[in-house]
Amino acid sequence: MDVLDAEFVAGATALGQLPAPTFAEIAFAGRSNVGKSSLINNLVRRKKLVRTSSAPGCTRAINIFRVRLRTNDEEAHLDLVDLPGYGYAQRSKAERRSWGPLIEGFLSERPGLRGAVVILDIRRGVQDDDLQLLEFLESVRVKPIVVVTKIDKLPASKRKPAIAALRRELDRPVIAYSSVSGDGRDALWRRLLSVSSIERPDVGAQP
Ligand SMILES: Nc1nc2c(ncn2[C@@H]2O[C@H](COP(=O)(O)OP(=O)(O)OP(=O)(O)O)[C@@H](O)[C@H]2O)c(=O)[nH]1
Ligand SMILES: [Mg+2]
Image (cartoon, rainbow, N blue to C red; front, side, top):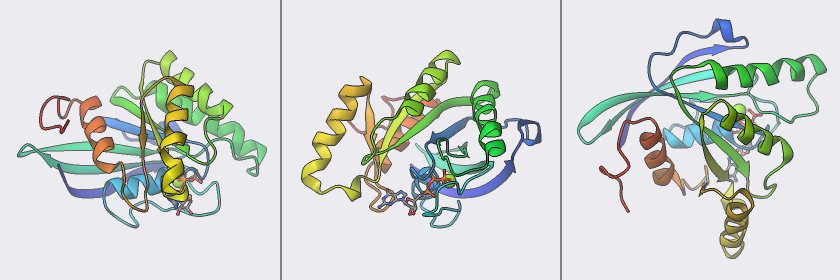
């Protein structure tokens, strides 16, 4: 699988401003500062396609990025959707009130949405609002893909036990990722192509 091209398509702070879906979409959701935007940059191997920041609350809009990729000698398009982070208390009340419906509205109203990557920080683990998001996804029948990121921040000896504990706690598969080293990139792409029906899981995927 090669990423041929990645470009910004649209940004919106209200659902009505978004263009109608053209290609299969995958959303990226998670608490503020967890590393959603960095993950998208790492997936498409571009350092600055998506703006990131060490200050939480960096992404305030819904931003759509279009990826052109080649897999098994065929070209395909996939739209990656960066969502504002939730759970950041320092924002104004008005902003916090508007984000819940924006995120939930997107996740429940986009007919092209094939899955949502739910991102957790390995040092913070699962929090109540992450569980609420997973429940919400189930209620609107959007497939969750759980990714635990920033694994480079834990010493190698502590990674496996921390990831295993998260898998047990959530009782579902978890992909371990680092947007610094690129660990987990191939595993996540395989999963994204599979849920987007761009590539069946048994075709071209490594064991
Ligand atoms: N070491 C390390 N740092 C990371 C990783 N991913 C993200 N970061 C850092 O974490 C901070 C937040 O990253 P962002 O990608 O902006 O996080 P976000 O989830 O998009 O944040 P909001 O848009 O505010 O919700 C930045 O300082 C990143 O450099 C990672 O895998 N490893
Ligand atoms: Mg962001």
